Length: 331
Image 1 (cartoon, rainbow, N blue to C red):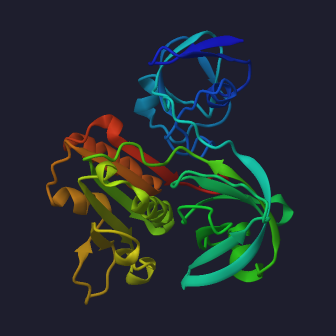
Image 2 (cartoon, rainbow, N blue to C red; image 1 turned 45 degrees about the horizontal axis):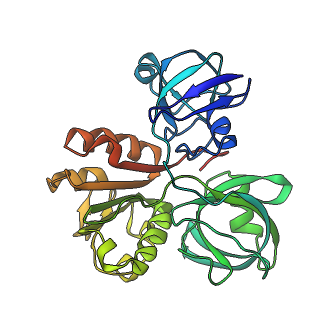
């Protein structure tokens, strides 16, 4: 048993062989995380004193980050007492994840390779989540995959998922070739720490690629309930895809007033909008980032590039939140 102390001064006991992230959760201390498989870097923290050992590969870290003492709390266990440079979520209490039965209510094709799946839970289910979080869906033969929630509340007793086809993916084969209404599945959730923090008088910037628009939609819709004095100063949404068909939602109709910039990286000749990658388009506009908070969701490559470049351009380091969609076994 080791004692782990955080930047805030909070501490908790970490049992042998248990990840730092799970040990913190057992002590009711919420640390940031997303995939929980070592593939993204949301749970990155720096070891100031003490030693750890890897429970799984930390592919979400670069060689330089390894050399500088960074580790992933989901993939590391304590060998000795530790002092870590990492911020917990403070007094924020997230709903505890649980296993739930569910059935497919509806499957709607939004694009050739994207479906919207509506899951309905039992009428007595009291499922609670914070807009931006995700769930794990357990399908046939126990296959488990993670999907962000695209709706902002559980008022209608249903959950909305946006699912992109993955070539050769076992779960993709199910969603696109076998799934049908009334199929019985299970889900575990809610999960993740990707959700809105401060909004008052802030310049909110959302970066999304592909189905990364799903949690952004959830968060945008949730802001419709914000009191006037809780609203951000501005909202900017950049959503990127390779081609026009990848931008499968009418984002302008989601909710409220905000600036929306659709971006295509491989557009047709008649495309007159922004070209390239969402982080490049944002930076080309030379925004003032000193009052901004950025929420990025989508490909891991976009997220890594966006954070480095936006911080270099003046974004405060702790005002970048992300949820990376990574390979099978995670998001």
